[in-house]
Length: 456
Image (cartoon, helix red, strand yellow):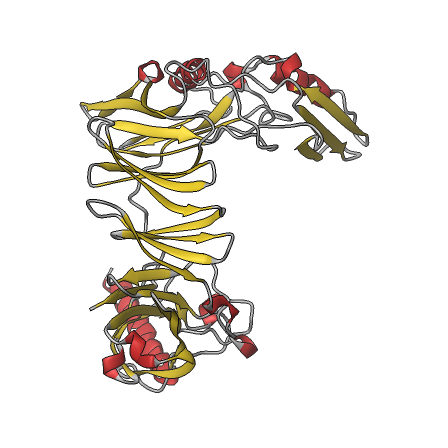
């Protein structure tokens, strides 16, 4: 036993020494992380008062936690630590709630278990008719087999989860069957599913291609929503691929936001789809983009005609508290949420800042100009901060030439006058890799919070 303990500590010491030597090679010093600044546009004074946290890892064992602000010059405040154990992604504490979707083609080539319907049986018979070495195409008109869209998906609640796809669990089968009795969406009369089956000569493998016939309309119900301590709230889009609206008249109460209550008793979750009910009625023609809950309020982002609208509801009662037209005559492409505000990007390449206070308001609307700058290929991983007048946008750097990972960040500032500043900040934490293994490069700590920004 003593020998094993000795070996363990020797290995730990060896790892620590190797970590120290590696850290010494990366940027020259563990204590001083420097930033090389490349101003790309505007006046650097526009970034005054910003603060950036950026974390960098190497080999899943070395971690630098850095904080920088313009007032610090070119040196960041850094803390370095080594761990004998590898870093792994932090586990999310969020609970998904009810996530279901229509699934008329889910069971082809498989077995529907206790929920096999007429379309499932037709799939199975067609699949079994293909002999080894053969290739066949099958065409199914859904309305010939089903009256309503079948559902599949998952229910995630604190301490419990159920999977509704090809399940043999009686409780899950009962739940999804009752939910289908509530969310009754008649299938489109002309929706066609095309299936290609290609079996190998020995019958050991099968290629299956499934798709909807392009000239025919099709629909996929998919829910979105959130969970509170007492209930799941969800809604879904009513639009078909061709932009038509499905029939929601057979859902009790009609279309809108639905509430599914649950309870926890003796450590077990009790939930029954038969308790599902309409919570807030909406026009089926309104296209829901996102719904979330913060501080006892439901925020509903949707398209009403030509307008992109934010409707705020009281969680306890469903009473509508406010309605705000955020944009008009444009298409919403992306919505990013942060603490106290959100940012919309639209089809006319404008950025719109909307605050989520007592009364939501449009605070800023400017042309998105920084993505045209060299080196600013922003995607969907930006983080942002708002100080009431300035929008700060940041993103980590990507892989550099010669497979050197960028461990710095880009910063952008907008105000009412438009783009005020854009700059690239490359840290001294650089290490070349061979292009095959990210562990051999310094890189943003994507196992935890890699980048955050704020106004001081």
